[in-house]
Image (tube, rainbow, N blue to C red; front, side, top):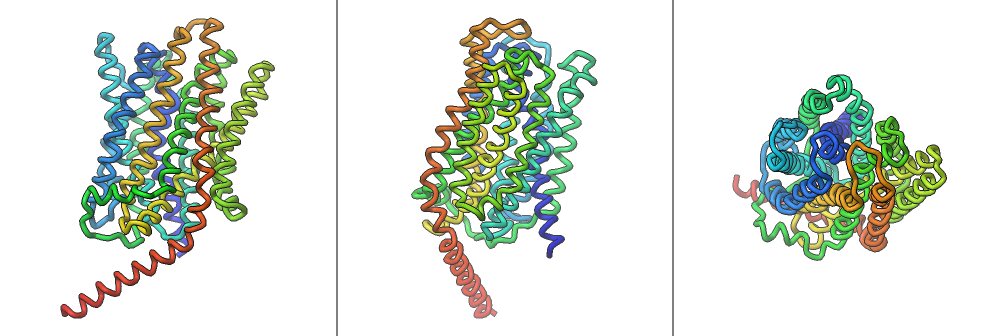
Length: 458
């Protein structure tokens, strides 16, 4: 039993590493790749990032509906690891291919490849979140599994940040276009292998109804689901803040601090968030999950203030201290919604009788991640364009101000907004033991009725 539990936890972590091998490169480096490698303007790059995420406003609910209608011998969520891992990996490679075409065709190619990659990432990442509700009915074990998932996420982020720019420079021999074209297929192979490992080892054990749920009824699971709405609003602003911070980091370290060499190191420090993520189950035993979640967001705001004072004091150690504090705090703020989404699925089933894990997860996690990422990438790009950023030259005082606004104050404001809905979560958190007990009784009653029908038929 213990071996099976450990296998499940490690396999769940591997599913997140798999996605990060491609998505981390996109989150941390795609904006800089578009402007400084592929030669797009900051305004065009921002428009592409936002367009792709707006498209996700359509595809996330569609994926959710598809997941609700999935019934296979492997379950609802698990088979999508098998079906989508190869298309997603290929799309990740094509996103960093740079064909020699005209300006308009460049924009069109970048937009198309990024949209396809984005859609497929929604398709394969949503089941990673949705399957949590099916892996175990135990709320605390869900927090533990989420911690393992976040461990996998940070491990993937660390690996990418320590290797991607180094490999691009080494394999490209000074030609970053060539370097990215050679590096991304290597990461894509790792993505496929790890998703297949998760497919092989994870099992959906929580009872799920096999009856057909109409689309309208699936959306009914959103009605009155206040804890889900709280998660949705907070997650959206969290991802705007987090992506704005990391996507503008290369500009910040190159042009504000004049330390380009610190970019991969600073981004690799994301791994420090493991210290708080792995302690998440312990924190949630000490105080409410609402309190842990809110403190993570407040800490993220304060960390941005530390970075600002570090810049004003021209102190690299102080800036790095704020940067690390930001990752430590945001680790908590990032992990909590993934765990709580499963509880909101239970709440929807308890309140409305509909268990729409795929739809709630697709909109509550995948859409927030993608929409937040789009805005978190587009807003800094537009700020840079407004403040007259010019790639690969010494920046004016005006453009330096734009970089600071993008990397420091835009994330700080978005983190602060994300705290507000969290303050109302505790009243729903208190209902979790009652919800679990009543749902268990309902499921046992259904099982007895099915057994009685089978017995009478025979």
